[in-house]
Image: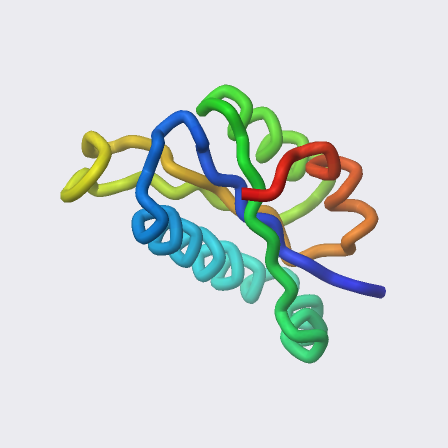
Length: 117
């Protein structure tokens, strides 16, 4: 089974590349830490496979919540990242979210039509 993690980044916030990288890193780490509590073997296998990740665009906060809810309903570990507001966005702004790691085919059923960041 091939595994991956998907990071969903809000394109409507027009964040800089550096800001996106930092927020995506927060999302990836947070999701892995959550997954270690309930899906430790899956995380271990994902690490062995090279920790595949992909960053995809979502158009809005509403879309971000929609995809994350679909993933939760499917049984995936998810997280949402809320910014502290020290740089580009207002405090409390939700910047991105993450799904997985999980089975590629199953994650693609949810996010497969989104564009790469």
